Amino acid sequence: MFSSRIFSITTCLARNHHSIASIPLKSNLKQGYVSRRIGFALRTLATEPGKSSPDKPELIYHGSLTSRMKAVKVFSLTTSLTGLAAQPVIYEQAGKLGGTPIIVLMCGFVGFFTFVTPVLLHFITKKYVTHIHYNPSTEEYTATTISIFLTKIETKFKASDVKVPDVPGMFTSFVVGKVPLFVEPTMFSDTEHYVKIMGYDKPIDFRLNKSEPIESNRKGGTNN
Image (cartoon, rainbow, N blue to C red; front, side):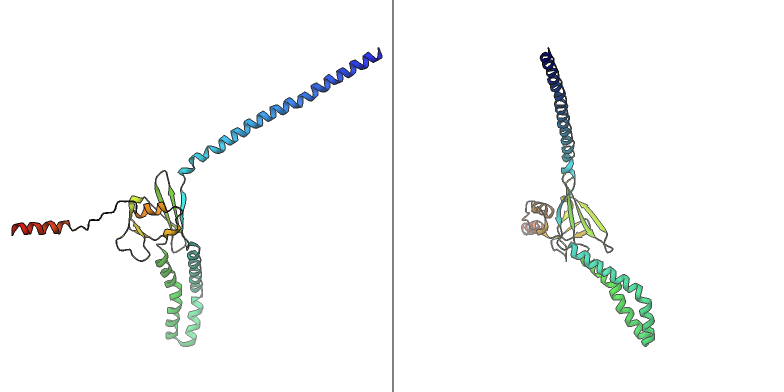
């Protein structure tokens, strides 16, 4: 009798242990299934925005002199502001030293570094393109230049809007509308964009536009 009770108790414990152990296993299976579904959903959401990435403008050009040019302009503007702030003191001291001639000399010296230098630097660097972005969906380029006050100036254009001058001017690679721009051919990440912008992919016209004078000479010869 006692042995049969022990057997029944151990059997019940074994069954309960089996049922209790099976609960976490089922829950773990459910959790694994749910986690897999959540992971799939997250991967799906993460890949959907990537479809629009080709429509975003991509950087295809970065000027090698961009950082140096900005540093020089910052230094020039800093010296100009310092010169403007120090002008009253300089004029006062110049008046004490020698009167009007010294004042005129100091005004010319300080004014050159205060006003002429930033304008001269801007005249030289205003055509330099620091960045070019390309939008594949619209086939549009955006060229960035820097103003005299270090603000960005963006010029949007297409390859059909570009005009390459027959005689290139100083620091001029091509012209967009009335805006001359200067780029470094070696700084393009893809040279095909440079070829497309400069029109090198177009057929070459070997005619020298001398057809009209030739025709007029022929007409003159027949009349004689």
